Length: 148
Ligand code: DQA
Image (cartoon, rainbow, N blue to C red; front, side):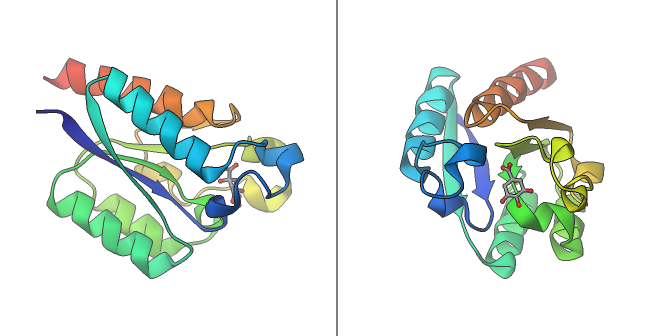
């Protein structure tokens, strides 16, 4: 059976395609989900992709991942920079957590330079557009193989 992975997307990512295309590109959120599903399938993973603008919903999904021992690929979007509640939920995860960003926050405004999620992340992939998610799936599949 394919290993399930939760792919969690934070606020405003549902607006991909129309949201600041010069920064986030022109692919839509539905293009993103199709690319992730396809790559996951290719790697023998089952991607359960979710997006929310609500901090509490994201925290509930992280609790589910902790309880069900699921690996997580997450783009926490703006919550990356200030949500201690999401950071605390990430600290409870028992399987790998890969933090992804479409842009490279380190090369942008000062407030984006700090991530409260990174201390709980296995690794961070940022700056490769939608490919950041595909690279994260690759990294996760290699991690899971090395642990099997
Ligand atoms: C982002 C970077 C964040 O700083 C920003 O708030 C986002 C998207 C990215 O994917 O590049 O919403 O996480």
